[in-house]
Length: 301
Image (tube, rainbow, N blue to C red; front, side):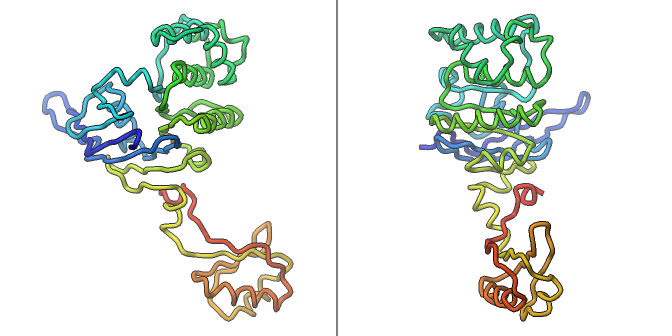
């Protein structure tokens, strides 16, 4: 059974002061997420990503449709003890220190050994130990993001919802958080994450869904999605002159020079043999033959 089940979830907002009108932010969203994977939820600004997360967290209420998490309807708030959530713009108690804030979150869940758990999590998110007893109002955006990740894990949840978890982090911080998210999958946890940083989604996620105008435009495994749009094959070679290679080709192929060598792109598997034969004629060296896969950015656009 999927760990998250979303069926025809719809959300309308009323906008306007004098003349109110309805704006549909989410339009019949249906989605299943399997246990133990990292699921990427993508979309442009205003596509409905944050609205979806707020509906699942029961911070707002749907106009129509339903959703279940861990087999429970989202109206069953007892299920929240098994989930963690990091919003896009978290608001913490500014005058608490990082240590005090995590102790407080742990007490809300009624956990054991709360102080030890706090130290473990602050270490895990790589927050400098000298900052543990500093007030949160003195933290940078990246430091607050680390504290937010720690609070999302304080109850050792089955599933973690992350809205822009890399926001405000420098390249080193992004790498550390990526490693942390990957480790959650290794522990058997499920991660549902929204992100604008497509390279992070491409590295981390098993499956993705791309939201457009409140509806799913694409959904599936990352490899399947990228392969769906192209059947091209590229032959990479070295030690060959591009002009001589073009003259020896018996097929119509795209030949380009790259820093790593010559790239021959063909559109059919049957043309690969012709490309290799032409390469041999000019004494080139074959490096690789591989399908051309769209980057996630190309698919997203």
